[in-house]
Image 1: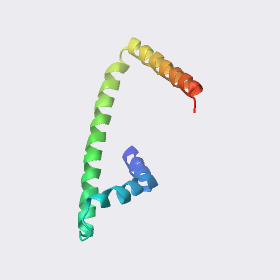
Image 2: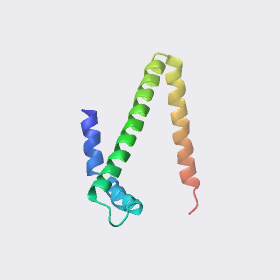
Image 3: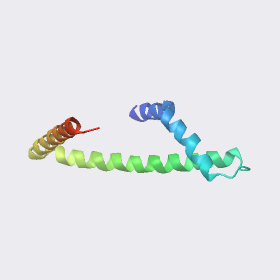
Image 4: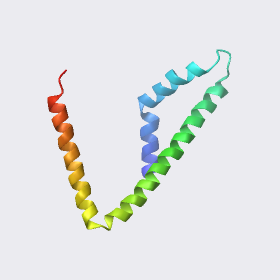
Length: 96
């Protein structure tokens, strides 16, 4: 279910489409075929999927182990609150 939702978000995200349209032609010869563009897009998509799958699997394993430790949850909650407060202070003091 989550995989399908993520695919739909990625496929309908105009930034992804613009990235492919703007980035890949820079590395292609003018006489190259459409197959070359499709192959380049497939390589980036597969590498990105493998990388993000790895991050998710490692993150889930770490979260499962840390969820059993009550003090880890407290520390993580406090660190997240501290980070949000810090970002808020940074945003409030940012001079444009």
